[in-house]
Each structure stands twice: as structure tokens, then as C-alpha cells.
Length: 218
Image (tube, rainbow, N blue to C red; front, side, top):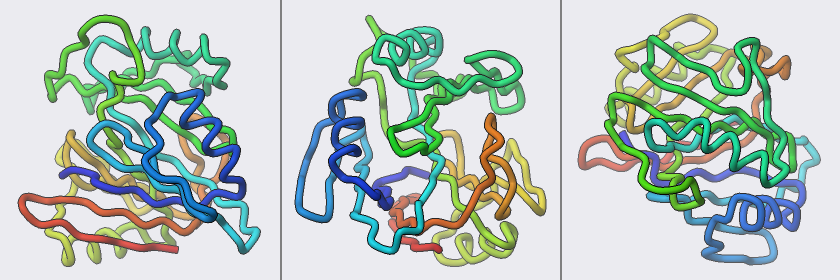
């Protein structure tokens, strides 16, 4: 599964541009009064102006090469970006997923993540830079019933559950190493924070095999 497009809401597009273009270095593809679009490796990241004052909050992850977690951590620190530490420290090793992650916040308090996946066998070349960020790899979605939402997604797109798990009533993953949807029950804390997940409007386009499908939730 590949994540082609992710569409989120932003209360302040000026701050969004400042963070994603200036701090992370993403290419700004389009800038309109109520919308900005960035190129993130093989994906597009789009923010729309939020007008309902609902204070949207999201979790999503970017794919980085193997053996680059420490370099990514230092790169974030050099840019003054807030790192989110876990009990294990700033770099988390998910043994079951054969992955390592560094969590951080954007200027709106969204929980972002750099994740490397050993089974993809993408090696790091040279120094870490914006070009090392290969695309959007995970999208967090919030639901009253994750299992019911997962079945809707499966029926519409053909996307199946992530073989490495989990598949629980309050949290599950769908897809594969190349792209995941992580579905959290409303109120469950987003790791590694004590920030409870809440529904916020999200749209995304995924590709499963030769089929691309759009979804919109919350």
C-alpha cells in the first residue's frame, strides 16, 4: 500500500508553511488563500484552512532509510524542533515491526514521526537531509470502533490488516511496511505522549495494487 495524498486541517496556514517549508524543507507545490500543498518524497501533504475552531490534532509518520534514526534525531535537534521522548529515550525500537522511530511535534502540536523499516531494505546514503524523507508512511485515524472502520476500508479498497499486528479493539494497523493506516479508538493516547486521540477531519488517497481510493473521516 502506498499513501499518495494526505489532507489535514490547519488553524494557521502561515505557521504551517513556516514549519513544513522552512523547518523541514519540504517543497511548496501550491499556496492558495485556504490551502497549501507540499511535496514529501513520493507523497503529497495538503493542509486546508480550518474554520470550525475545532482545534484539529493529528498523528502521521514519514518514512526514512534504515540506520538513519540517530541522524534524523540530530537533524531535528539542529532545527530546534521539539522531540517527543518515550520511556526508552528519543529513539524507539519496535522489534515486532522491525522498525525504529523518532517522534516530534509540528507548530500546531501534531504528533509526527520519522520511521525506518528494516524489511524495506532502503539504505541511508550520505548525510541526512530533507531528501532523506521518502514519503508519508503512516496515517493515524480516530474512530469510535476501529474494527468497524477497518472493515469499511477493507471493503472499499481491498486493504488488509498489517501482518505484524496489532489488531485490537482499541488500536489496529492496516497495510504493509510501505504504507500503514493506524486506527485508534477515540480517547486512547497517541504514543509516546499522554495526548488522547480525538476525531479530526482527515482525507487521504491510498493505492493498493493498481487501485487508488479516497477516504474521508470525521
